[in-house]
Length: 430
Image (cartoon, rainbow, N blue to C red):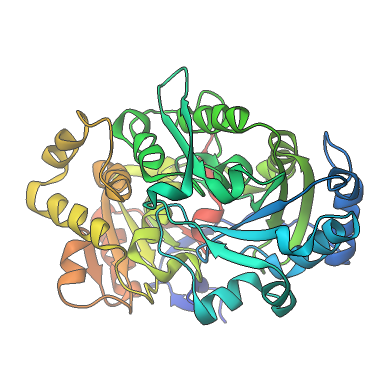
């Protein structure tokens, strides 16, 4: 690979892009964090020396049942590393094996079944020894009603399997999230195993348009605050949080009380993830972070929002995403069709009066952010025909030509390249 060729995360591998002659690239990556020498040993250590709680072996004593939440297939969480040691610890402490369950926190995404579930769990022993189920947000009977949050009156209904378990543990990946600040921890509960009314309430425009509902920000973030209140309403909950590097290797694991252990992981990764830059760019090239995040166009929008702090007004944001599974849900497709038909301003006007967002239209609302700032162009091999039109963004078949056009239009040869997409947060610091 030459100096003017850069590899973007794309699908299961990389997409090599060759910059046009004269382009001056600034490549933006996370700061390198040391890989854990022995991931399994690090997990055992975290379970033995937790944050603000007793060790797992002690927590599991005298419990009648347990439920472990795992993220769905859209997150590359190393479930295969930690599920078995957690479950074996629970069994050793006296929880009946048949009373231990693993629940896939799908939110309003589709269930993960068959071979995909095998891939997600990452350990055949787990599937053979405990119950593994998917959360279904539309199943009314499968939820417990906790009432409403006090501050913003969000209805709180959570999956019964988790809510009624004697020992409750959420597991996940701590990474920047373009609405909730950071993923993992409390977010695996809500929206992860919340009822559709709960999810649709705090994905409504009054939350989404809040200027503090952005990546890497927890202070004053209305989604984060609602999630914390939901956790408090639920009661005693613990979490195992992981942090991965660009190679998807484990660099940090924390376990303990859900809020404190999540904050410990955020504190570990925050400075390495947010990269300060002294200028903005007329051309920004990014990715959707490769598999599994770039499986759909729905998830791709995250990569469009994260780098906006360094995009000059009127600039061009170029994103590469495989979209190997195509567009996304039928509801998301309908929202995108309304966007294309109405245009951004009229589409947003249809959202602001709603107390309940339509399912998945919040992702279309997030797409308005880059569209308001500049032009968005998408390179993908996974969308065809009507799907390409419904993106509402420019479609490109040659990245080098698109970059050259943007440089010519702006007269600025400096381009920002973010190979790992939304897992890296560039910050403009004048």
